[in-house]
Length: 375
Image (cartoon, rainbow, N blue to C red; front, side, top):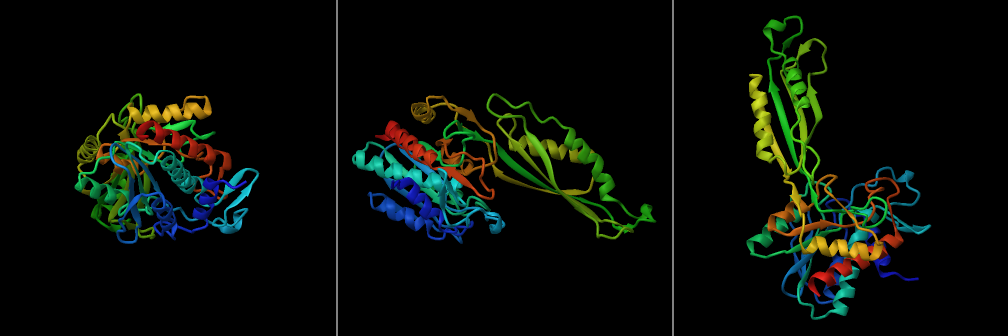
């Protein structure tokens, strides 16, 4: 039996859109949206494809997503070629099936059904799609949002199609995400011979006590929406490879994931106060890839919960767990934001798949949310 959501998902999966290459996915989506009267603005920047599409006027509900996918890894391990979508035992296999081409298909088909049913709807339905979410995210959603802000556009509601569910579609919706800060620390010493340590200054010896102190800090206790701030050291590099040389520098990279209990400014300030207390010669470069965002209540949360309960007969959990998403950029425009998408058990893995029935139900959930907010 022909299913428009699955058919579109298969067409998208068959395009090997390794980030930031779009591989024609957005042309396919634009063609479908133009056919039902959407106004399209193509916003390609560098090697990243983006588009902004709108239908109607008034309060705006945006579907946000990305057409890019991560590399498939060793294709010989896949049961089926990753870019040749296969349906087996009720599962749709292929790279991007869950993250997030299945969601994109459900969004577009929901929009088609909605516009057909409500051609003169009262609000505005929009799409914000990028081809660079999985890698640098520099020329994607962030740049589009900056352009929309400059044009004084408003977005009241945003649904991101990231795979938020754990066991069944809609059992979890993400109403926020933690922020992320990376510190790139270099401790400067003096290179020398290991037999003459008094003529050198070993940055590893100086750095180890500092790093032990950094690891032991309890940053906060979290709050009702976010877990406590966490810090993890991700990279340490030093030395020349020779066993008789004291290195001249030590590089340490560490990352914070934080909620709303602490600000990024407070975290950076506290770290640098610790470093200064050790009287080291150091330099540090901070990179903030996203601030935390949170939607605790409002029309969007109510509409999403109502839709999930209608189809699942069970209320979803509201969680803020996981990594970052493009919601960190959409937050700048002041929108209420929720992530609702497929089960995330196989994302970025070999043999990624999504249940066919889940995508069909997700389309219905999306359509009901649209009708609740802007019909």
